[in-house]
Length: 639
Image (cartoon, rainbow, N blue to C red):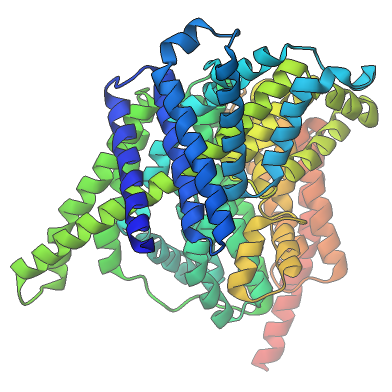
């Protein structure tokens, strides 16, 4: 019975994928009804999926009841669409009850899929929207009629559940979840490990560098740090431990690398499309601005892993990449990603680009089947071809279903965030929070940014990147802008800290997943990941104080100079934190490297070129000392 239910759920996921792909190419329904269908099927996938997994009979009955309620609400909206549009802002009594039931179903589905944290925050915002006016004056919200609040949040079909965020989920994010699901099922990620082997063979650091490269490539598509750790960590973490990394370090490297992939263009874990919509700019502007920060993120992480491996005495990895695997599977990633980038750069719509990237991915994998057979030279080519085609079909269906289920999970969290964002906007709830931060900061932009960063990490804990970014931008965005930061830069600042919540204690969901694989204590893994990512906590502040890092200046030379200076700071700080430069560092040498990094950061943030000269001088002292020491040690060994 359970296997039949699982197959029916997979069939529903496939139907959702086919519907969404079709809706991007032809207007099947009005935009709001596309959102309603998207949300309605997503609710069924999440709730019925949870019911299928649970062993508790009472919980299963509860989930089936909520799923039935969600189905009834979605059907009501579908059937009564015209009347609901006419009655926007003035819903009937039945409309109000349906709207309340739909909000409840979304919050419950989000709780089942992602835990209670965000649904509780959204519920508190909704309750404040209804009755916040009854609080004392200093905390009171605007008084809005109950029926109007319900209309604004749900059944009015223009904001809340059916606002711009759900439209982005239906039209953009879902497609890239399917793209990621297909990339995994059709073996596009198999080439990432081989690329990592090539890097680790060229540089000391072995499997650590391999993990950073392969996990970053996978992370840019999956958009979920925890899922990426589960996919790549099961391979990279055991190899790192085998080569000499302790369990906590191996888990920390994987967690950090998987987290950073969400900041790498072109996909950026789908968050680039949300940001473009919020800022009313093109996707290309967002992706271009993300290039230098993404390069700095991975340079800092690679430098930390490199110095850590040198201190541990880990040498180059001797395992050569499998060229046959690269030939067979690298095109499955490169060609569709190239098509995606080409279409987006040439300003085709995101939905158009996503659709054709999916089609190209499937077509490339299909075309590669004869190539794979030619390389393997089977004894019975026709039988092998038939077997490969059957396997391709099954993998294609599996990838589409897996992508739909990932997209459904994102849809319900986006629904909860829509309720939160509309409630915060309607009541002005963010204003007191902004006033409190302004009071605590004493008017200092740096202090205000630091307080906002802490808020971003706490609010983003345990939530997927897309959800964390939207949640934090709705609440903290106005606060950052009010402190004097322009809106574009403020959103990048928020995004970086929302993403870094995946490796920052006390939650650090990516570190938790990595520690489960490595067998290391969770907190030790989380703190090691934090140490590896130290420069990455500084980077968002550099984006605020130097627009060149986001290519926001008029002169390309400014971006290049800022990028090179930030790269130097990242390398110096990595050497200081990991205790290695040319050889193992003494305390005073590490202090000089840390001071040099601080001086370079001061130069980047506008304190003048003299600080850059100071940074070079501070770096020169340990460099000369270690070169001399290494030469002396080499001389002793030769005698």
